[in-house]
Image (cartoon, rainbow, N blue to C red):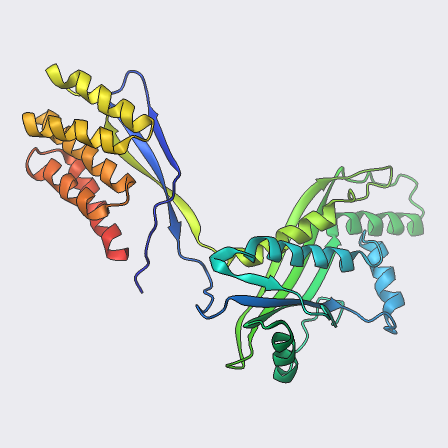
Length: 336
């Protein structure tokens, strides 16, 4: 499948005072890792990651939370932060809306065990109640601070063995959040996407017990939600395009004028200056001007015109940078 590349408005002009060269950096998008069907405009979101209050194993869960540096019930707040990140990043993207049903929390495992998918009657009911096209469910959410857990276990072991010198606690703690998501399509009864995100963030510990700071878990949870949404958003990469800021002889000043125009994003004006040079001279100056014109057209989003001038730079005037640039532009046009 061909991908349409849209040049973003992130353009940096770089040059050194002594060199005849300058260059421009352009920012291009890459295809997202996952794709949303075009008909999905409204997504309902629910949190299914929490265990019920009367869970008979709740005591064991609290014990485990204390040993791992968690606060009992902290995952309830943190998992909501995870969902808030999804709202912040998805709502408004591609004219999409994120909505929450009246019952936004469903019973889950409360552990790292991923529950079975929801039945389609339940999915359809939630979507109908919110007029949503799809249902996104945070199926599982769990967190711990494994470095602190290791310290606690070592201290307990030393106490049991009678060791007097307890190990020093680390001054940094790594938070781990695991989240598992499913995106349901109620019309076609299909799970559009399912994905587990495993995220880490490191924080400076606080207090004499070297506990994570209060913001550590919410921040890591929010980051985990962001990482899920990133699957559906294009990534970006930078490309570098060489150009000439100087020419030879009587055209030296004109080259400088054209380059200065490009530095303030007046690419139409710069191209006009460079076309004047290409029209009125030949040889190296013309080849350099043609190359600069090609760069200017790529910046303006016209890759076909950029290819024409890059080829002209090499074919008519032997500019080797133009040859290499033309080959790059040929490849780009295959994906546009």
